[in-house]
Length: 321
Ligand code: DGY
Image 1 (cartoon, rainbow, N blue to C red):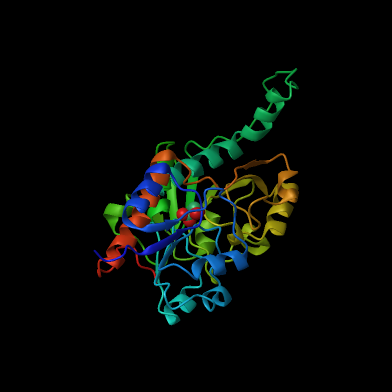
Image 2: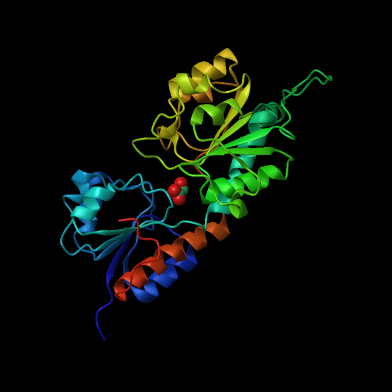
């Protein structure tokens, strides 16, 4: 029997995923779940045929330049691949895959949580009750904004954007979106296409970001584009932190241009941005969009499906480079 390929799994995955991986590969695990330094990552990759990383491991061009000839595939446990320099991987002959589809429901749920938490002042209310500081009630107390019947703007109507739109329809929201191209009717389901971000932003009472982080989208939310939103709009970001210029966001939240923001992702992770955390009108989560039992299993299995295909000489279903 040929030797099983050697696979580095960089972070602690679900038991069922690690068990399947151990059945089919010689696995190198990281049961302490400590994030490798750049040097450790390079060192660990020297002795394996494949690596199954998360978005916490950065395969920049200079890291990829240090990869051994033996390393054939980076099978990501994420849909986002901005932590991998795809051009450099391609040049080095390393296949790269991701895990689309399986996290759309979970991430769309978190987008709704962020939207409602921001609109209805969820963090403020929770903190007040927990701290034993809830000593007053009146009809004027903790008044938020209602989302029902308002306009839900989707920037990036891909898989996650479409599910978020579907959930927002459940609140009677009117769906607007911007994409490179309009979706076919059966996917758009009546959502209104805008061919520019200016048009989309002008129509978005809630703007929800669902585009990947690329050189073109980095900082797409900035003082100029925030000014295009209706006054007192709500920003939701469950995609990638660096889509947002956080200084501009803080200014807009402080001035009241934005009513609130619901954020699951930040420019600096883990940790977030202390200037954002200091504000009352934000609802914040620690990058847990896909963190459900079901979705973590599905992401792990999908990454293993891609590895299996590669090592069986087939084209992996989710190849991105
Ligand atoms: C993704 O899949 O891109 C999520 O952000 C988790 O990494």
